[in-house]
Amino acid sequence: MKSFFQRYTPLQIAMHVYAWSALIHITFRLLTGNISPNPIQELEQRTGRHAVTLLVLSLACTPLNNLFGWRELIKRRRALGLYAFMYATIHVIIFLDLDYGLAWSLIVQTILEKPYILVGMISFLMLIPLAFTSFGIWKARLKKNWKRIHQTIYLIAPLVILHYAWGKKGDFFRLQGEIIRPLIYGLVVLVLLIFRIPQVRRALASFRDRILLLLSRRRIQPEL
Ligand code: HEM
Image (cartoon, rainbow, N blue to C red; front, side, top):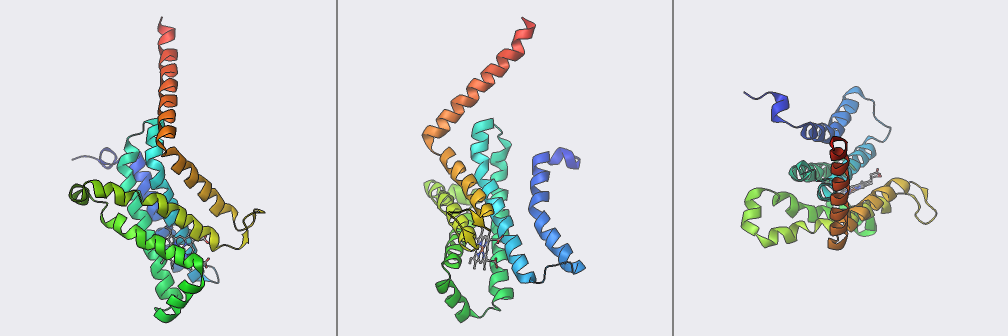
C-alpha cells in the first residue's frame, strides 16, 4: 500500500490544508468564543475573502504553468475552483440565513438597493454552472461548449473583485480607506488576464524557453 506522501504531492497537501484552514479557523474561534463583536460580519468577510483568494489561485494555475512549465498546477485547478465555490456558497448562506434570516422581501430590497450585492449575486449565479460542469463527464458531454462555459471565469473574476471593492468604504482614486486589499486582488486578476492574451502567452513561452536554454548551457559549460 502506498504511504500518504507517495499518494499525495506536497502541492496537493498544501492546497487542501490552505483550503480548509479558513473553515477550521472559523470553527475554532466560534467554539472558543474568540470572535469579534459582530460575528456575522466577520464570518461573511472571512468566507468571502477565502472564496476570492481560492478563485484567484485557480485562475493563476494556467499562466504559471505556461511561465514555469509546472504541469501539476493544471491538475489542481479544478479543486481550487471547487473550493472557491464551496466558500462562496457558505458566504451566500451566511448572508441569506444568518444576516437576513431568510426574509426574502428584505433580501430582494437589499439586492436592488446595494449594487455591490447585486454584482455579488450575479457572480455567484455565474459560478454555479462552472462548478457543476467542472467534472470530466461534463467535459466529454459538452465538448466545445464546455470551454465556452468555463471561459466565463474571465468575466466572473473581475465581477467578484468589483463586488469586493464596491462593498468597502474608501476612496478608490485617492487610495484611501479599505480599498488597498481589493485593489491588490484586482491588479493580480488583471495581470493574470493579460497573461491569457495569445500574443502575451507566446512571448512568455519564448522568454521561458530562452531562460531554460541559458540555464542548460551554463550547466553544460563546466564539463567542457
Ligand atoms: C449572492 C451572492 C453574494 C452576496 C449576497 C454577497 C454578500 C456580501 C456581503 C453582504 C458582503 C459585505 C460583508 C461586510 O463587510 O459586512 C460581502 C463581502 C464580500 N464578498 Fe460577497 N456576496 C455574494 C457573492 C460573493 C462571491 C461569489 C464572492 C467570491 C467568490 C464574494 C466575495 C466577497 C468578498 C471578498 C467580500 C469582502 C470581504 C471583506 O470585507 O474582507 N461574494 N458579500
